[in-house]
Image 1 (cartoon, rainbow, N blue to C red):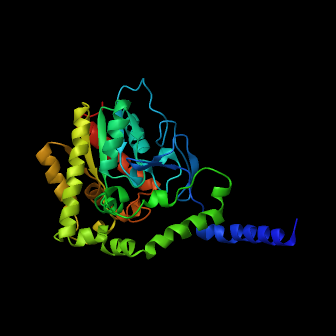
Image 2 (cartoon, rainbow, N blue to C red):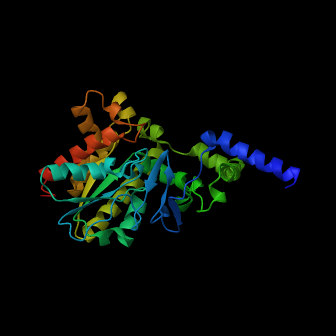
Image 3 (cartoon, rainbow, N blue to C red):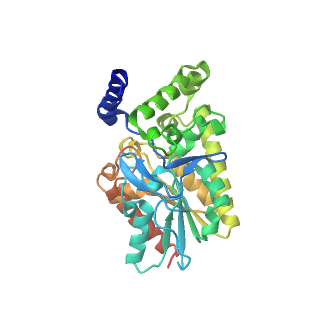
Length: 326
């Protein structure tokens, strides 16, 4: 082996060891999808956000649904339902809801169809393509405030971004999984930020906190109106399959800390009342039940395992009280 090659291999090996904690490795859990942007890879098994995650053969997290299940509840949502920063499938919100229902004597299978970064428009397309065939009688549509803002930046919706998930996705393969290959991919993607069109779009992007603070801004009003249209289309898709939709609104933790920021949930409550759709306000229920609801969260939006368990108990209570499962 030549001296030059030896030095190069040593340099790469040193980079792997030293840069690994800072760069990390891209994941193989996601696949590109021409309609959805991305989806979970059926049978995927890889690291994501610091935890090993396994995806079943149908392309979602958790065990496969059983044909013998007498009742089914399908959980649609983003990373909150998927269980970002939660390594054990049994600690996700859907699994905890199923556990609490079982403890109450209700035989109901809760299916976790959450995909990180998805919004109602993606959930509707997936539900019409695949989700409805699972036969769930109840579909819980979990909404988070970034469902309003993040789709605006996606190329599929007229923006300039691929999405957080695809930005951190690689094809399966030994070499593509190295730290140096990950660093190279991210460097190449970062170059787009220097393009005037991309830089301008990012500068004008509407964020969650701006939406909360300034609901009267034209951009906020337009984004909120678009969100409600897409939620309505998803509700209509669920109803067309003979299932019962339930809207579940999740908070950002800043809403617990700053007065006067609950207008999105209040708006959703009124919208659901006008459509005669069941509505659950997770944030308000947590605020009523816990002296410090922020402690139930890993970060600004994702529940910790303890928080997911608490939310699961709340949702099980709602499903039983409204007679949606028995």
